[in-house]
Length: 168
Image 1: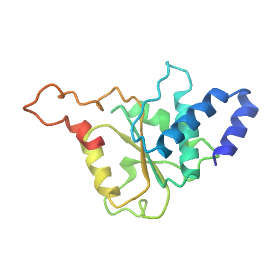
Image 2: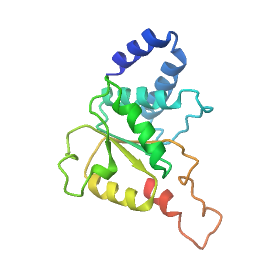
Image 3: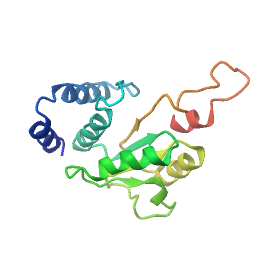
């Protein structure tokens, strides 16, 4: 999947070595058991394309369940979802968490999934419950600065923020 995506991007845009390096760096971190890291980029720098290429590579590497979580904004979810859905190299096609029911056959152990979920407690609780038995998971947090950090970290009398706790 990944090499097909790279071939397409090279034929369309030329030199994409920076994107390939970003994907390789992310895979190396995962292979070294680094379970959390940040990929930073300026607006319009290709972060979504990097997430898409990384998703292709993760599927090639044997990860079965890729969760793309983002700001609780329907427009942003639709924009990113459509970019993934329009990618002919991506297999399986992505699904939105809103399409998943707790007993839904979309989510089967041993199958591959690319799932989009907005960061709000209701969505996250539902998707966590529906996918709790799945293995080989990776979460890609687009807009990691939005709601993901524990905004209660300096308030010792309180637990972690709800979104932060759910993303752990």
